[in-house]
Image (cartoon, rainbow, N blue to C red; front, side):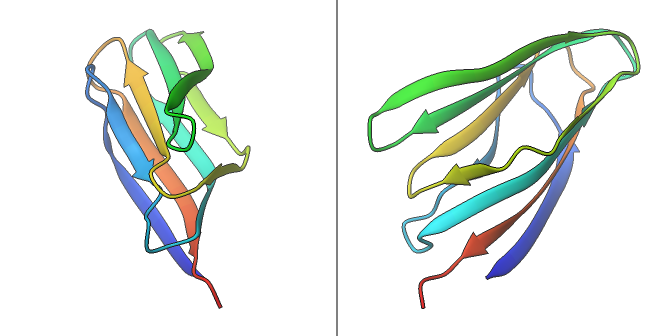
Length: 103
């Protein structure tokens, strides 16, 4: 099991936060955090590689300075992705999770 954390700024055209690797049987995302000093709309999508389908997990309209702290657990298999969109620039993110290797 390998721990990971990433942070940065989102692109308004979408930012792939994490992709499940074929070399790692399971990736779990435990924490997602987002913030922008201005009012913004945040959309989180999950792509399921097995079914080749994308679902919107949530879309939230936020006031200036609002922070989203998402502590739901997201499980990603090989090829699955979590992608997030912000309708304006300047949205920062933090992600924390684990990659689970096979025994």
